[in-house]
Image 1: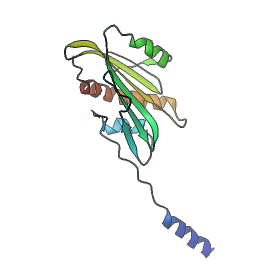
Image 2 (image 1 turned 135 degrees about the vertical axis):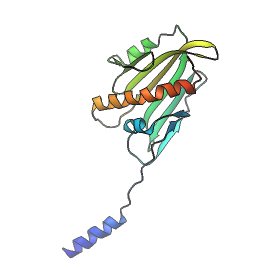
Image 3 (image 1 turned 30 degrees about the vertical axis):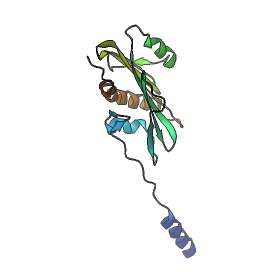
Image 4 (image 1 turned 90 degrees about the vertical axis):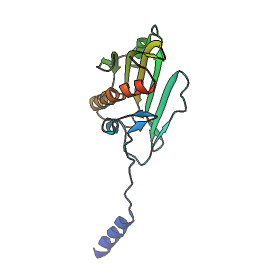
Length: 166
C-alpha cells in the first residue's frame, strides 16, 4: 500500500498542467470581445490565425487551435446586384433569420450577415460569414447561440475594418 502511494505521488509530481492560450481581443486585424469569442473556440495550448486564402476581393481568416482549423471568417463587398442569398441557400438551407446587420441567417455551424454600405464611394453590400468546424459533437443549440453572439459583435467591427461605411 505504501509503495502504491509513493508511486502515485511520483507520477503526480511528473505531470505538468498544460497551459491554455489566452483568448485574443482581435482576429486578423478585426477587434473582438474575448467573452464572445471564447465560447466559439475549443480549449487547447496554441491559437493561430492565417490569412493565406485572402485576396483583393475577400478578406479571409482561418483560426486554428493546436493545428486544427476551428473557425473561418470571410468578408467582402458585394455589388448591389450580387445574390449572396443564393449562396446562403446552399450553405445554410435550414438557416434561421437572426438580427445582425440588414439581414442575417444562422445555423449551428455557419452564420452569414449583410449590410448595405460603400467603400471609397463604391456602393455595395458588405457580406460576412463565420463557419465553425467541430471535431466533436456537442449541443447544436448552444453552438448556434454562441456563433450568433460572436457574429453580432464581430460583424460591425469587420465592416469597419473593410472601410465599409453607411
